[in-house]
Length: 389
Image 1 (spheres, rainbow, N blue to C red):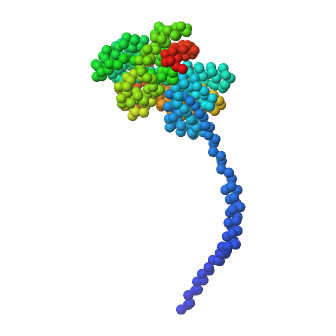
Image 2: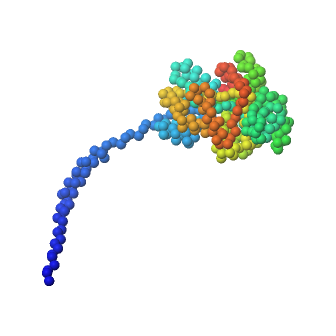
Image 3: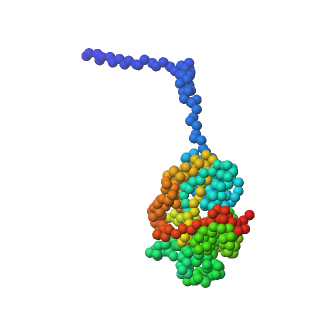
């Protein structure tokens, strides 16, 4: 028998051992290679511009968490102090980058004062919000029965918006009429208080002062009071109506939206956006139908003026005017943003209300407008009515 062939297995050559000296060399090489990468300075974080402002009701916009988040992504931190618009206009504002009074009278005072003293000031109008009388459905129906209010959309069973004749409404107050006198009992409520609208302090806020200006316009035969003696006579006539409200409060909106609101003040003067923001916070298609708005028949649209006091203020103003995210959020907070020509309100708000199943306010074909007196005469009107210091 032949011998089996021998199968030789060859082992691969042994790898050289990783000696301590070799290991140290490799570590040193890695350090030499990686050191420039590790020591390279990190890219600096984008600089955040801190901007400080002072304003009245528009503080709602800047304190909104979504607005704050958008601004942070744009490298802005905005710090705001809350104050009535007229108070903004009559106090020192040099430590601020911008102010945002809610109406033209306060803005005119600020612009005039700044320019006369050679200080920087530039005005922008990113969005608008009309003055309205906010009330509850039973009170709107009682005013409708009295021939003072009319539904904007008569086809709706439970309309959210009415027009109110300010002259007739104030006439009820002057006549000493009470809610029980004009049939509020027919709508399930008893209230023997005087028929009137409650405002914030005229010496501090734009809404309170503007409402007095609208009453003066109505009582003057829908004419602007253009002389000191004319304004003086109107102010003296309006003073008792204002004082009939009792002690003024800085902000009427929390009372209006509270469960006890109609017991405290059944009609309050606010801005449209404050009401619409409340409705837009609700589930789609489920409006609060117990709270409704009364729009003065002689339309008056306040123009909140963003007044930049330096370059940082101007940068923020341009962002508010042009940034799509901020404009969209302003609409979601109930504001009427302006088109690019800065002349007319865009259709974004109407579109959003429709998407949420909410009725949109409409003035129809009536283009009648109310006007305030010139700024110096308006100041005379307000200080006389409110006894402002």
